[in-house]
Length: 33
Image (cartoon, rainbow, N blue to C red; front, side):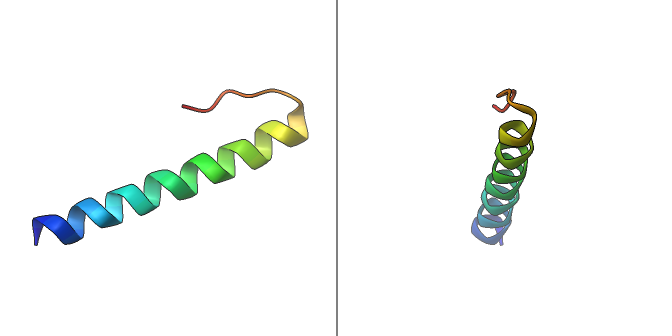
């Protein structure tokens, strides 16, 4: 359903942001939306 797709997209975005933040901390720069 649409609600399930939306939840999956939000979870993916959160995971991507966390991954980006972890990389940014290692590199000493923040380039995450």
